[in-house]
Image 1 (cartoon, rainbow, N blue to C red):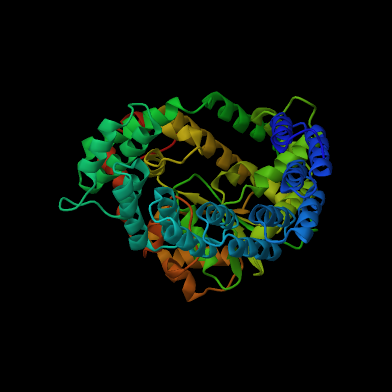
Image 2: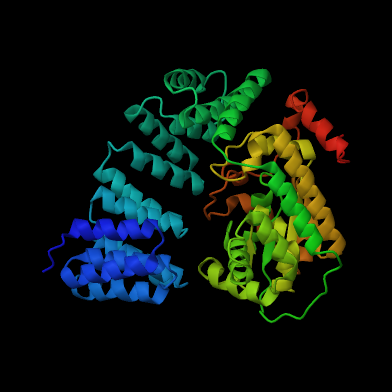
Length: 525
């Protein structure tokens, strides 16, 4: 047995991993296995290192070798599930996670780990069953209740989600996330609202704390429900101001990126032959413009699988760029400068590998990451038979809907009105360019048309996709699959037009934004 202890090995492997020293971490894990062959540490950490180094098969082999003689260890079974997922073997990954769930018995921490993997793997119904067990085993743990509340919300079980939030508040009075969740789940009225509780929690929170930002956004929604628009805007401004102080964002970089992309695609893109056999549908635009709504409509069609909001396209493009870009050029702006020369076939192969576990078994699938609007020409280079559905919305309605949403580390342009306006102008400029170089290939769908003329707009959408009309597409709100985006409550309801005009309650506060957009040639009347 080695003179080195397990904690010493763990510390060395961890330090090397933090430095991204994969060869050193691999060697240290191998030494740990040699010294402590019956302990899981070297096997598990060695597998984790191999997976981080993109050596998927090696990672799986290490953890399976240990499980062959030590079956049932939850940590190792979950690592096996991670490896299988990375290899695109969804069914086998979920089977390994199910085995881990059995091994977790009624141990809350182990069940929590299994539940988190199932959420990551988009098995929200399976995760809910795990969290039911975890809550039963540790009913006084507010974090487990909060996680179950989120799952109920994703699955459209809003009253059960609210009950879990109320249970969290009994255990943790003034919990900012639970209060905010309640406000999102329930329309606030004069008779029943969370305003006093949120104000008390805000008074107790640090003025610049994350909890304060959460509560400001919750209060803004509550006051808007009550028609107290001046108070709503005051809270919204405070919440956005706090969020902006925590985000590193340079709006000039986004403007430069858009300029670089436009420079890289100066002429009409040629239509090439397809070598993939795939015809994915990409739903693009800005957040809060109806992308989730259209995804639910299409996901209700018998031949279409909704793959969700994938990062696979941007990851695939990044991987292709990194193979060809000179060292030290890994900035967003330097990436964008290479887009015009990228090979579509390489992007397609990377994308299909990265999205495999999400694409389902139906003939067609959707990818609804809104920010894929940056890559429209590259989408058609990779998949000549792809379809791109671009959601539009009234400029001030779109910007207000973005400004009122706390996106949790996404969309850094969203928290300052002037920066939001600058990004919106750049987005419109880029989409106009795509229509010039990809004539007739992108379908614009106005959110307002979807809401006010649902059936004819749905028929136009399906016609563009060369899909037969199905009545189920009009009943999208009954689709039982999970929704994890900010629209999870709204798209469980039949279409209503209230949201079309909400921005008008803040026309005075939005006037500087309106002037900014009009100065750029964007009409807002």
